[in-house]
Length: 212
Image (cartoon, rainbow, N blue to C red; front, top):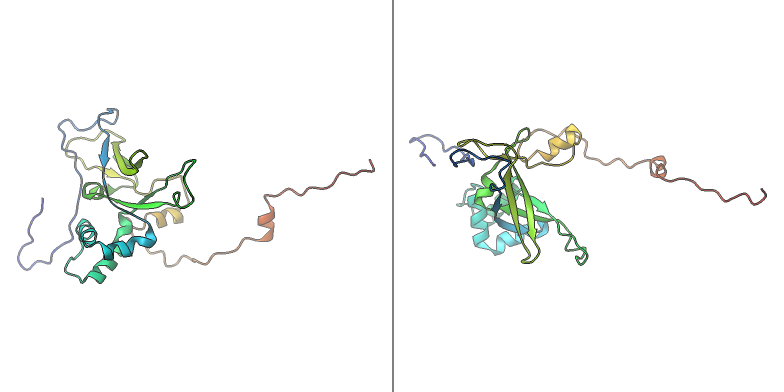
């Protein structure tokens, strides 16, 4: 539901949520509650800007999905979408015995309006959402399902930064699109490992002593 702001009041950014409306809620053990979500845009990162420039309907849809100012000129709107898309972007890759190296490069995608309204929750998400690639039709979807019981009226949330445990700094970087923080103090220069480190995984071998 959208409400009009009172006259003279500055318009606040929209806040979106996905709520469970099923009477009785959802039980995570019930296999009935598995849902498919369409993907609105699939691309390679290096092709994203050009696609936004070449396909006006795509630019318009992404601007609406991200709540951007559509009165901007096209070039500025492309920049705005490109700057905002990382909050919505996800990736998958396709591998198999007949896939080429190019085919296995990660593909970036943004879910449709419904999927993109599901908010991030790091600590206790109520749903999990994973990509599903249907080889027969070469189409991808996202599969959404609850990981705990969710009552009617409760919010559907998910963790966008799933993965194995990592150090706090790496996790802060992964969560940056959803949980902004200042990382300007972090030294981004890469330190090359020492020769001893490179040799640590090798075992020196010697020739047998033929005199024995």
